[in-house]
Length: 369
Image (cartoon, rainbow, N blue to C red; front, side, top):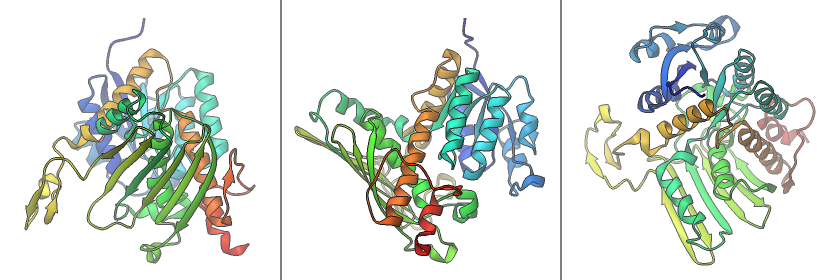
């Protein structure tokens, strides 16, 4: 009989997203955080704040090397919230150690590693959650309920936007660690949102336009992209993602059907507006006009996401957002970079060129052709 005890969680990574995960685990009754670890410095780990983050969260166990955390018998589930290039190594090690895993987006960089993750989880009977929080945000969930109930008729078009000013950490601009720019960081959200809204229908073709407009001084990675997806069944999606928007983040969608239109704005229409000359730093309100959230963590779906993953662990099933979904998104991103590089529509399935280790390499090599 499955246990009703909270799932005991160990977190790997100490950046901003780990702090959100810690808050989500505290808010989710199905989970309890028990330890935190970093990627070891002697193997290329970046200086982090792990010990301080653990102490602030009241965790008595901190491990500078994540492999020590994986040895802890009482840790059932681990979160992988590290630079993208480390996701595959740490996720596979966690599965080999018999741990369930939640992996931050993107799942990993190489499709063969994604396949290994899916296969190893199935072989060992372990749960892998793909941390796509948009599919758990209350506004977006309500929108999907309305669509699924037939409120628009058979939907045929969706546009989704994920855009802000740029990342908070330098590693996002490192091609080796990130594996891609705004498409990998923001476009992955839009891609999975479209797949989810269309019932995980198969994507048949990808057409993309990608460029660097604002952050070229920080490196060669893309900071803006437009991606068009053709789905089996004829549905279309137009996705915009970037690090190019001043004045706050936009996360929104517009969905069309023969009997109506549905618009969703996650962040810009919260029902609250404030103008403050000095801002409210303790509440993440900056000088000028702001639309502060009233329950930011819940509005953005983090506790609901972690609760869903914990329930899947206890049930011995794969969650609604799984490693297989992360693999599908990764393939689409590879195809999008190829489409932008070659100026053509790319049909799926897509096989990356031999020798490439990250999606953005297809695009970065475009001038050498």
